[in-house]
Length: 82
Image 1 (cartoon, rainbow, N blue to C red):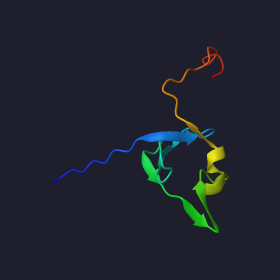
Image 2: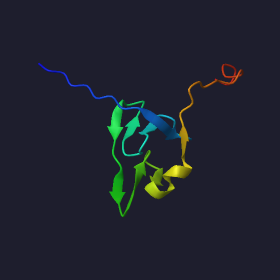
Image 3: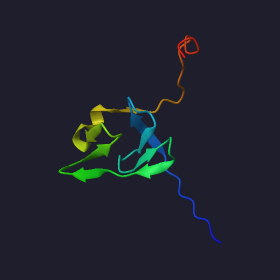
Image 4: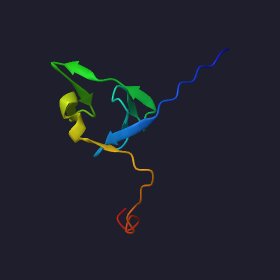
């Protein structure tokens, strides 16, 4: 039995759905929660279906992505707001 492993470096993520991450050229989309590669949808316009209610067009994608920070800090009142 042979095992093949492919590694991708993700640089971007969606601002409001941080589990959806992209490679540098925005050609590959990965879901961090499901550990799967996602596909772009093509229904009249090319885009990404984030969930059942949110669809982001590929032309508007640059407005919704951000760089993944190297360190991310949580607010001090995080535990009190649970």
